[in-house]
Image (cartoon, rainbow, N blue to C red; front, side, top):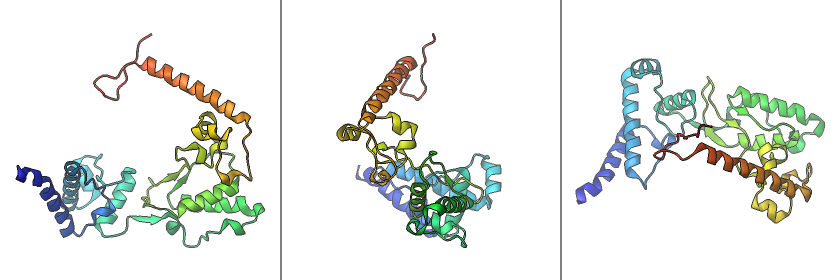
Amino acid sequence: MLHDDLLPYRQNLAFKKEFELLGLDLAEVFEFTPLDLDLENSRLEHLLDFVKKYQQYGSQEVMELVEGRFCFPPIFPGISPESDWHRFKLWLNGEVTRKTIEEQLPTAFEVKDPSIVPDEELETELERLLDAVFSAGYGIALNEGIPPRIVYGQVLEWIGHTVELSSPDGGGWTFDGCTGYCPGCFQRPWCETGHSSCWPEDEKAGKMQLPGELKDYVSASPQSLDILRELQAKEDAEMKKFDEERGPQEDGTEEWKFRLN
């Protein structure tokens, strides 16, 4: 019984030792689950098998030809086929797999502090910044109508974050600015979802709750709370109708059983 209890730990140590002997730092591409060693061991085994096959075949092209074209490295986080393969190869070569986006911008590009950029030059400077981000393989997908100075500041903050490297062929991160928490979102006044969802923070404030950074640009009226309540009630009713029409799920799967009218 004792032997059975210790087996997952022994397997775990053995897998990690193999990666250590290969000179591979698991922390760069792996999600550890110490509270579920069976899951962690399964992932370690899968990744180790993939590494050995890649070393055997010698290239991505040969491996995809032999194993199938939908053969992707089982690394974490899984972003896109292009990005995952790119980071997998960097990892095998002992190179870094993460950098800030700012570190990846063209060397000739100068990131300017927004406090020194006059209003009349802000749009031009924002375009330069967005072009530099796009050239590094990353995307920006924000709502339209947001004041340029707010966008500039938010993008500057984002490019300072460390992210998984993007493949030169694409497949990198896209900044949409959405955290799913409307009361704290700088995009809320320009976002359809933000305009139609009523949060406890809105009820407490007696109006649409907006982050402090927007105070110089927009303000919410007391009538905004009634509008949010009405739109939220409409959304809730539509969702209830959808739930009723889709019917019960079968065997707990994600396939819906729709009623035929």
